Length: 273
Image 1 (cartoon, rainbow, N blue to C red):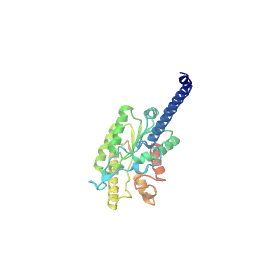
Image 2: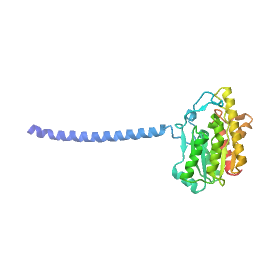
Image 3: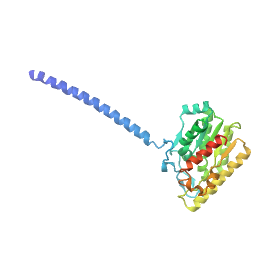
Image 4: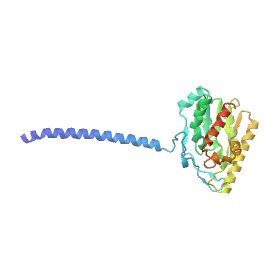
């Protein structure tokens, strides 16, 4: 009995040690889980860090020459994108700012465009930018926002580059966007330049021809719709002494000073210059 009594203080100490060891283990586990959760957020491929190019995560895979020589549009819905949260969309709408629907070029440059517009005109802007999306998907997003939030007076459509894979489908999407916007809103559409430098010469030539085809469809639509304003990105690039090489890192996406030049064209159009 005496031996059992003498052992009790040690048992009590051991019990407290086990208790605190369990607490420490639980806290450590929670910290590890929190760190892993943060890491997964950082690594999540669908979250874009605005203004930072993501290299290959912007690229749309394609196969073969396709019907029009540029190939066929590959899967794009898992590529990087940036979409404004609901409170920001509603705030932009309340102050009659700008909605913008874009592809990977817009996604790469949109943070800088936001700063430029804020400094120049005071306008706020809400984004739906998604790498790889063709015009049809951007117009789907426009329609969704129209139903869910309404639309401001000014809408920027910065899509069409991914329609080089199927140019005949583009015109119907322009008409659809204008129908959704209605005649009392201004739709600014950035036209297209593509000639992917890593592709064979025949594909580069097809890219240029298909870009011109898309741009002609925009011009045709503008003749029928006075509220459609074309932002002439292609014409700007073609007019440069070194042609597009100085402004594009791969024949499609901007490098500097290309990003700043493209954003200036968009801001000038919105500002009425």
